[in-house]
Amino acid sequence: MLTADSGSFETHDSVIVYDTVYPSRLVTDDGQTQSWVILRHTSTEVLFASIYDFYQLAMILLLGAAVLAVALALLISYLLVKPIKQPRTHGDQVRPRWRSAAAPR
Image (cartoon, rainbow, N blue to C red; front, side, top):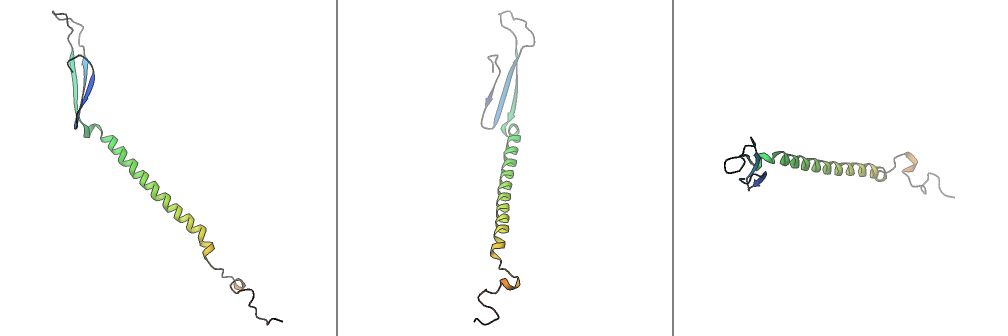
């Protein structure tokens, strides 16, 4: 931080961002310029809160999409198989064709 550069330093639970500002171009008696170091100390929970919220929302949407896909697949398969599984109930079609009311000749 004291090298008159800009940068950042990250620890496990916080991030420190620093920048060097030159308020004036005055040179001191020993030939160096004066500068200020402005730093900001932020906890990682605050800094990455929006990213965590995005991940949480993305997971909820992905799980919802998966549940919806399974529900639609079950509904469509039910609608496709239902006509095949139902017996025909229209009069003559229920009786087998070899059984008729008249005796065979």
